[in-house]
Image (cartoon, rainbow, N blue to C red; front, side, top):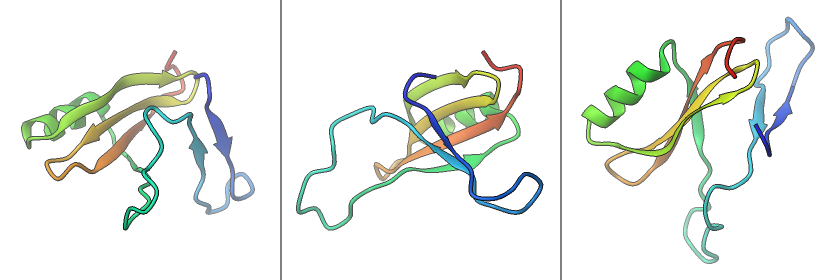
Length: 95
């Protein structure tokens, strides 16, 4: 995926909070706001099912499901309070 940068925080096989950086999909946070937002992303076993759960609960799809080639599927939703969150499903065959 263009703009994706993987972050590894530990040796292979050891506990760590690995992650990644993506290019911003919208405008930068407004200066002077009480909270500078960041997006939490959670691991889900079935991304399509969990997208549907978010939508059924009143959320909206912020960024459609897309592949991180050879790693996973990733999507972003916005909850009913305007918070954006990501969902990540491991899938080495994603392309």
